[in-house]
Length: 267
Ligand SMILES: Nc1ncnc2c1ncn2[C@@H]1O[C@H](COP(=O)(O)OP(=O)(O)OP(=O)(O)O)[C@@H](O)[C@H]1O
Ligand SMILES: Cc1ncc(COP(=O)(O)O)c(N)n1
Image: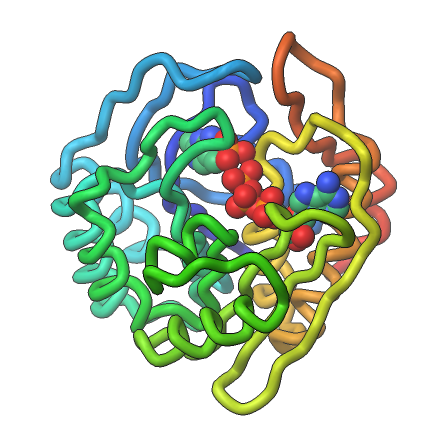
């Protein structure tokens, strides 16, 4: 069985963060493991408190896994503080896992700064060069590039800019633009476009986490990146189409059994 690791924050309401990642790994028939960087108190309506996990305990979690278990794919989500980012980068250089997906989580859908704004540059400097692929959404790409992004041409320029910051591949997600939802993948030479119709729902809590952990799963299963992204797009669309009207705010995506079957449990 393939094994994947998520280094991210805990979402008490189960829609995003570590919880979304582990559900996605399971739905792909992958054994999921976690390094928790922060515990958040949140639900479909907002984030109410955050406790950052210490640098020492984050390091101990990473070492405990890598000293014992092979990691076929890894994703990094919410990292919150400069010291957290530094220790993660340091240890990823030591253990050098094959497939690293960096989801540069900055601000939650409800507007809470999950990444300390002072740590943005550290994330770019320390984590981007380690990424097999980095998966910013439009607001994150705007922070990283200081560009305004309102259309596909501007998305392409931003993807090129982020590539030059050191990521081997950039998947710029278009979920925040109007009309169809198009994500673009840039490998330093060519663009690939992944377009799907926009699902009309308010329940998109955790879409970015789900997409990046689906990509991680597919890379762990051995798919090349462009196929890993394409399969992950199919997965996120179904998960959004079947999203759950749980709670009073933005409900979560749904990882249900037929996705699990489709993802090929026998791998
Ligand atoms: N309403 C929608 N219909 C179809 N696809 C969507 C919709 N919303 C988002 N997506 C897709 O979901 C994926 C995640 O994109 P999005 O831009 O929402 O990420 P995100 O903002 O990082 O998510 P989050 O902050 O919830 O983790 C992308 O592939 C995007 O195209
Ligand atoms: C722990 C954690 N990680 C990531 C997100 C981003 O997800 P969203 O933008 O859907 O709130 C979140 N809300 N919580």
